[in-house]
Amino acid sequence: MTRPAFVRPSAATLAIVGVGICALIWGTTWYAITWQLGTVDPIVSCVWRFGLAALILFAGCLATGRSLTLNRTQHLAALGQGAFVFAVSYAFVYAAEGLVASAIVAVIFAALAFLNLILFRVAAGQKAAALSWMGAGLGVIGVVVLSGGEVVGAKMEPAAVMGIVFAVIAVCSSTVGNFFSWRGQVAGAPVIPSTAWAMAYGTGLLALYGLITGVSWSIDLSAGYLLSLLYLSVFGSVVAFVLYFTIARARGYALASYISALTPPIAMLVSVVFEDARFGWTALIGLLLVLAGQGLLIRAPKVV
Image (tube, rainbow, N blue to C red):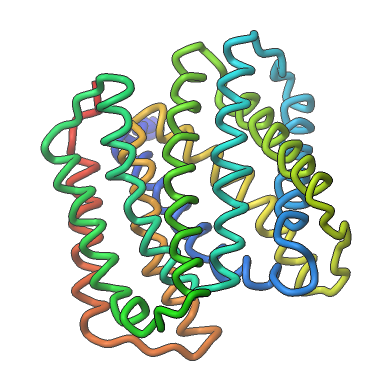
């Protein structure tokens, strides 16, 4: 009796699975971050999170025999990636979530796919297909519709305005960080070692900023803080970012960054379950637009 031949999943299928996993993880991290706010300074929480994640990645590379050696060009790319993705962006994400609802921050991050398309077109000369622009546009529109009630309901007080500004800075910084990640890819840097170094550089820059500004170095030993720290480090950082940058290299940064448009529906579901939130029929329309945009981005040819 012959065994059935193993059918290797297509690249599109693997991309869909990877995007889905990242969206599920990051869709829940918006809620997990709220467990980090309050007792510990946000900068310190970021240091603990990405410092632990970097150690896990370094240990994983050593355990599996992966070389951690990068050349000068690859290190510079990892430094830029760490500075903009893990230091600046997340410092402002944590600050923004302390001022406005996480759904508003998620809405702003839905622009990441669009910003990536623009930056890579201008800085790298990459020409995205029309389907990519349409898909990214549908994602932005869908998330705005989906979370429109949250945005409209936010009172434009100084703190809320500052929170929105922080979120905009965060998403712009992530876009620049993605460009540095691409530079590392062009220089031949492997995904996992370069991500480990990027997180280490980001952690170092955050720690340096904390030392200069005189933050209080502490850790909350409550179960909620430690569990959220472990989840954000292992799943929200190690697993999700390795998947994200792997998808970005294989299928382009526009498709990978579309994860930011898929996370708000999941974040809203988490809010329904844990925070007793309620959403109307506009949420369904927004979700359908987001999924339609995802379909277009998956079907679009890879950026050249």
